[in-house]
Image (tube, rainbow, N blue to C red; front, side, top):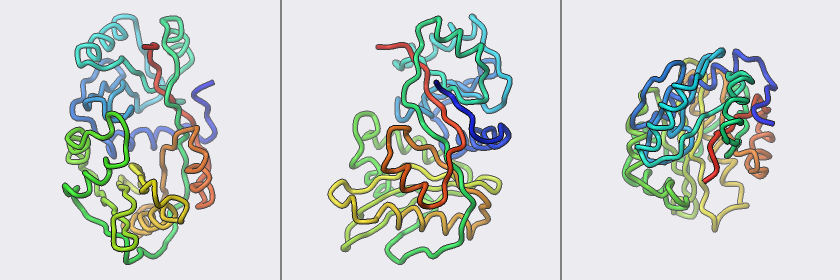
Length: 252
């Protein structure tokens, strides 16, 4: 069922291209039309073969080469399939035993002017405190502060690292990057003990306000398809579904 296309392909391409810039991997190798990205397993996007232009091809030699690269890195071979990828590639991977995992919805909205609350601290560089906080409530590979540092310290587009305080303590984290009129936010994490208090809305509204003031015309994001709470929040802020994508991997 993945991927589905709800918006114009040109918008999908604009988002996918900027996703690579806003979330760089530690290492990138080019294999034909594909960018093979490696970041010690921290996040699917930074550890998969991706395309940023429609019409990509993928032949048998390239598939086997990509599989060897990821296996040698201790990672499951992974292909990020968005609407930029045609049905022939999905069919070929399906025959080889690949199946979609970790599906996400790309959502987009106009940038809206707003106010940055006093409790929201925005920094132009990732501090050790922000990296530790962004990993604190994560699970698995996403608790690896060194792996996260290797990603965020490679971001070259203007970015703000957000920490929202509540009752004098850090309660939520996120980052937002601006690339040629479009801003993407991610790594949104709210203290599990403080969820349901509206902190996510304050956090997201504040970073969007910064992006608008910095020149963003549109805001986009990737939300896990099963995360109905987050998707509901974003919809209430004016975001609409643009497309879906998934990582195709062979079962363990």
